[in-house]
Length: 363
View (spheres, rainbow, N blue to C red):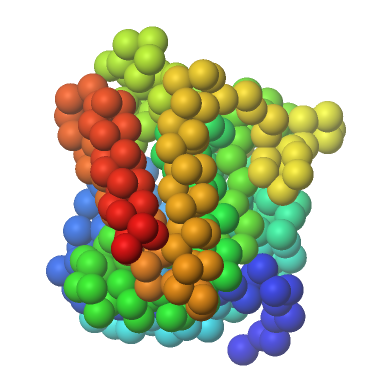
């Protein structure tokens, strides 16, 4: 076992993912994999492309990508992660599924121990934006990928109503301990998948988002062909929602989810388009007015929570968690609805939450 020294933000990220992924039972884990199959199919990616391949799951987390590739016929899958908890969960999951061709190792993506061009496919799903140096990690996973090999890459896209809400939640819960939050959500019997989703967004040490042009230009510079984002997926994927949206809906979705499945056909040609990290947020992005208007009621809720905390004379972490969960659940439910995002319904929900808090402050 390697001794990887993690900085404070990486330690929080390790807890965020390790302590939530370990909660999945077999049924919920299988449900967690299903969206991958939907995305492959809807973007016309043949799942047989993994058959007989040597694959790297770069930042394996709970092992979804590893199991997916094994189920699709990969000859060998190596998962790497810096969380020992995640690695143990992955080993148990592989054993549970009956796969003997999966192995899991503790490494940082900034310094992989593999030779150049060691893998036919690299899977890196929802990882880079949570690392201390995303661009260096991208260079490393490119280095170990064979020429003509394929990269599956998913990073968060800039902007939109969802990330504006998440940024507000992160600020609201900045003084709440992540482990305490997980326990409280479990006591409230929030479904495991929701807990994992919320804790990921609420507490990950680094949380960057990118524009499609920034990522696409960097991938092309690193030698990838067809570095175009995948537009289709599940109903709640913001990239999917942008395809059947009017102008307001597109603005509310921001850049959309950024997923790519591209082939490495050349050598890196420079560093002009390194992944940006403006103020720790990734790409520069200006929110449209329709999104900015939703921030106002959130700030009003923050003000009333502060008044309530002052009135009670002590921190109110559980109260804050309930409020944040209510708002996150509402935004997510609107994304999971096949109809157009109902901004009026969200505004009404925020106003109701605010009124309830104000009633509490006046008692």
